[in-house]
Image (cartoon, rainbow, N blue to C red; front, side):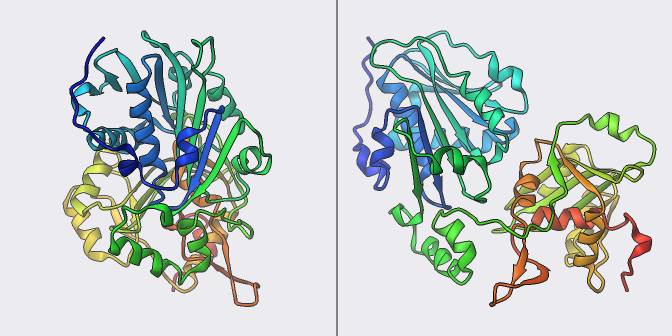
Length: 415
């Protein structure tokens, strides 16, 4: 038996309040919808590390819809948890393959994306049992069948006292999502369904709290992003879309198909969004095959990201409100970048052009899918639709519109 020489920590001080039931629950499903800064992911990461160290039979599988998002989210969060618990030296963190090993026993924390289903269904561990599953940003999984297949991978005989458990954490963007009916509308003794928000996070700074006070000026946004309540989605701008896998090379080779790329600038709070599309002019279909969606990017970093994605030579229509940024990206190597046209009623004209097409979104484009499912027409104070879209959940939507401004262009005027 390995004797660990660790610094003494008091776990309740690290975890904080609001998650007692979550920490103790031993049923099959723990489902936590929460607002921003609600501690849901940080609390779950602490739980993963504690369980690994307490029980030599437990191994974890950590999943997001796309594998490329795991390193900067769950993997980084678990490394943070190790530091908080002062146990970093007992874990080996590898990025190729992406996994964490508990050195004293060889237990594993494995990471997979649903974009490679074969890697998910063929997992085995050498020590103990794969009896724990954490699905982060579970809202990204839009098919309940996809969840069921993943859920079924956590099975098999376990030693006495051990149990299987699936943990889902997510932001509650839409009340239409299958998660609501499955786990919140139909209570079960085998399910712990919780709603948490920033009010249970005693670790927030004064400046953090100011952001939420400012958010109260937009009551609808505050209900979801502040309090963790379901977003009630009605009056969607786009109903003509579906999530579907497809071959980019095959679509690109079809007669009458052309590429389209749109870029919307952001930085601190709002993300920079690049949307990559193929437009089938003959069959009136728009295939959305890739995206970039990230905050905190300088123009140089943004150019490097786009070049690394392989789109340096593509014609990219960018938000014309930032001519300096467009010039800097051009100088950084994006020779095909040009400003979008923003004429009278360009937003509504752009939406109407896109509505003439069917949108087919590749599953890897999780942020496009989220925005399509939450982008709504605005209402006035009498709850009547105004005919204008709300100015939120629209960063990818704006980028998509910029990139597609040339389709059916003869129908519209940009004067």
